[in-house]
Amino acid sequence: MQHDPLMSPVIWDLGHIAHFEELWLTRNLDGPVEFVEMPGMYNPFEYPRRVRGTLALPTLAEFRSLMEEIRERVLERLRTADFEDGNTLLHDGYVYAMVAQHEYQHNETILQTLQLKRGAPYPAPRAIRMPAGSPTVPNDGRMVRFPGGLVTIGTTDRTRAYDNERPQHTVDLAPFWIDEHPVTNGAYLAFMEDGGYETRPLWSDAGWQWLGEEHGRAPKYWQRNADGWSTRSMDLVERVDPAKPVCHVCFHEAAAFARWAGRRLPTEIEWEAAASWDPATGRALTYPWGDEPVTPALANVDQLSFGTARVGAYPRNVSPIGCYGMIGDVWEWTASDFLGYPGFESYPYREYSEAFFGNEYKVLRGGSWATRPGAIRNSFRNWDYPIRRQIFSGFRCARSDT
Image 1: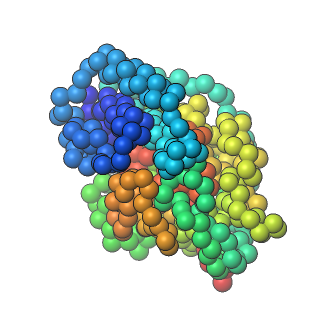
Image 2: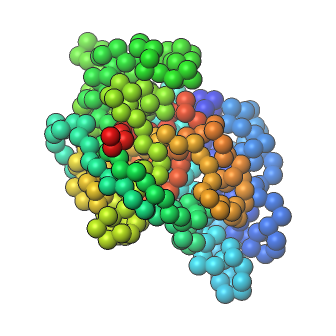
Image 3: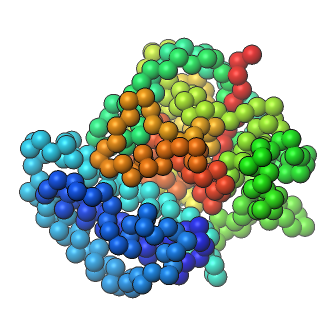
């Protein structure tokens, strides 16, 4: 069933994953790329999320049979793939990484749907116990300084990076300050208690309009009771922990908090520089801690915890300038519209990135606890409507060096 018009029925996501794999790893490998998305009811442009619950979708058993059959054909085609024949899709196995990341991203989308599930809550299969971290946040709101100067943004990687992460380019950044940690529940509670949701000057016109329509007074899934505020993650309801990053806030809420705090949201270029640039060596790192691939030991990722960790719980998850937690836990809103970098070229299909360029979407960075390791890095760019908060989203603030 469709639990919310914001999200597809889970079974639609399964069908979309399967048909996308079949399209790119069988048909598009054996001839020119003549179309870029599967036709019919699994085309997200022809059938937006709000109508997918009305489609005549197959049963789960039928889908599983179909997915197994597609996977068999994909593996058979892989056995004959010639990675040296000049096909750019096959160069360094790019198309396989692209399809895997597409599935990883839908894994996270499905969890957003399960969080919205009506009826009995989804029994989350929690597989790890997160590091305890500190029950209090020392120097909550502390900022670190980025010295400015020439930095490289984006990547030259063509083995797995999406087209919107390229081309790598140089930017001359002014010095700025950025939060050492993502904004915590404790800090956000102070904003709420100070009348943040009722103070008009803190909100943009679009944000105030959203507030009136949504009647928001707290992050999504928060509920007030006699003992204070509680929050829900799937089947777990617990008291709001002031030392955890705030989650399930939209861009407008993040921007209002930043104004209340006398700060602003970072641009996505500032965010990436703070996460990746090492002023001591003059180079950009793949992850905040270096080039070692992300694992659940380094950051709260991979759909194992089903919740956020206290800030500082992963001490190695720190960037060269001293920003903690820039990978995992919560996606972080930035002030930037989703646009192509200078010299951008669509590859291998414009509907992944280019079709979304403009001022409708804001960029998010860093991944969440629900992000698969293969679909996150410092250069990875996510985007969504500024009103969305069913996503696993938080933020950190910045300010100019004045």
